[in-house]
Image (cartoon, rainbow, N blue to C red):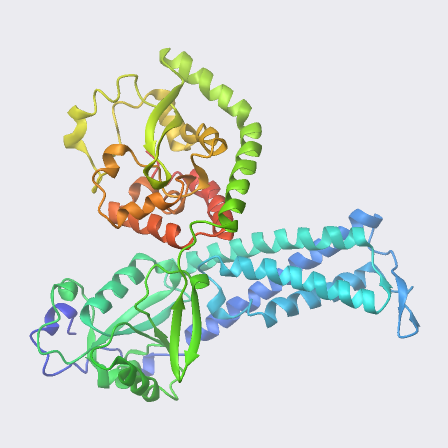
Length: 508
């Protein structure tokens, strides 16, 4: 087997013996497995919708035997019970989700689009049922509809979340995965390989790569990766047949890449293989990308990030209303924490620390004090023990943390007072991590884009590993949020924060 590391010494003759015998490979197995998984999700959705609709009938009428009123094309519907209505609504609801792609294998496993699709399909199904009843003069109980669809939407979201976690669990154990052949320049292949190995839950198992015929060696980008080289760009079809790959992922190609990509797609016809092209656009979310073909060219238009306007006003209103509600609910907890801190060492309850907010404006950030009173004075003597890269300072077992501090930091309860910063308009519920002025002084120019939005109590960094993240990863996540924020993304991050806090991953 020839690896990327060995390829620079054997560029003239690509290997032909690296893959298992074709008889042992079943290229269609992943697709069949995902179809079976989609069928199971469909059955789960149907059960949840039936539970919601029957539950709504019981809540409204005390049972499911009540009859509806009205007529359809002259026929009396008085004998139709709400059990029948629940079945019809379930069929319409499931059909709506299916037509809109909710059971496509590509829908499952990653991103918020699956959850958005479930919610939007619920709205469409409710509209269809309402219009049908209006046109047919069928008098369904408005109380029944008002309960069935909202409750059903919640049930579906919980069901989809459970299905996703099950899928991730299976993929981490190498089930329901796609066998992937990477194609492109060495640097692009190495980057894709790193991402796919870092995120096994996405279901991509890389089986090999095809590189261009280079006049020089592949370079340091791929030198340390153990990955079979199955050929050159004109060997992709045979590499697919030999490796049993069911997905070909193409990154940057040399020269006239459009012509190479066209010939590559032609060569794969008849194999039943998915062809995936990685655009040169990175860290740009779907809503900002619009496909507009012009004169046969598939042009991608990228909209500018939105930092002002109506959506920002809506986000600000949402932040303050949400913070007000959470503050009221969390007041008893804050009182208990404050008493525990005071009784522990008699020092101040709150830590008032200068942080940098939107456009570089400094503000006083509130936190429950989790360290000894002279923690800042002792920082210099601990610098040599820093376990974090970049500009951050983190120690897993920081000796300055108090007994109460260890508990509240594990559960991120030390950050609860930042709700007051949100109410004052200095922070958001969701956003980049609020940096210290000393950290901002060391920012590179691109990192300063984190300051284009208000910092948040939680964010992508919070739900992706917190202190376990490298500096580069935390910057990448924060910049992605800055460029692609949306209210729906905020809601997803807030929901994930609960699991991240309870899981305590990266909290110290």
